[in-house]
Length: 345
Image (cartoon, rainbow, N blue to C red; front, top):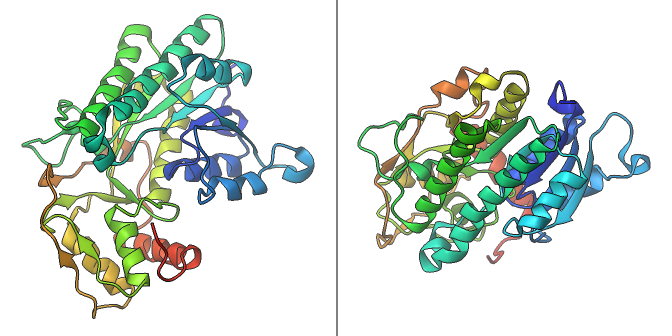
């Protein structure tokens, strides 16, 4: 029987040890859901370990009224293992967040990115298709795509009906996963929806090649932040807790309203800024106007402007709670607590 709401559901979160995954897990657990977290590695720095301590599978440790968390060590490229996790745990709701998420890594070595982001996605969806045929009630699947799936578009902000036209390896991997997901709706009536987020930032992101954590780390060490581009590219930046709330809003609506199945949803605060402006905002928030960014200007394969319209998801009742200044204040506080001065990547 399908759950009436997400609090009563058995939920799978892939990529649970990444950046967004622990925030999604935390919201689910606070609602009372039973969560199976799946990842192929569990770095000690991941926030998922804090949640594992707080929401243990044992009721004696967990306490009444809270969700339960179980972690499994599985690579989404291994189809049979993915199938078995979904079947054996009688999963009803899925957040597929697992991906190789670093653009530079994809450019240097594209095939592993294609395997993780494309094959990993069809493994999840094919397992769901076959298990639903056996009667397993999987009624809500949210698949994380990206604003990068749009590629370079002439019309801004991006709307969800724009074509998927990634050109470079990471962008292409997201375009393909996005199209495959929606194909499983059109071909097999899977209750899926796609999320396309702007650039996420916030506590728990330890990929210091990204502009927000990299800049904060540099400033905490008393060093001038580096900007690999010329600073002019314009992007969306969305605070990670707002993105987690958006994922839950979509999954919950899918449980009740199958008319949104097959749709994509942009997740954005509708306030794009340039890379240089973002760095300046961090310096201002950290009261380090004495540190001037070093603009290297050698980044390649940069789309000049990428930003989204979130009008569609706002129609589900979601809106961001954090302004850029508020989100940065929360993020900086997290890094101050978790990073020592001079911490290395």
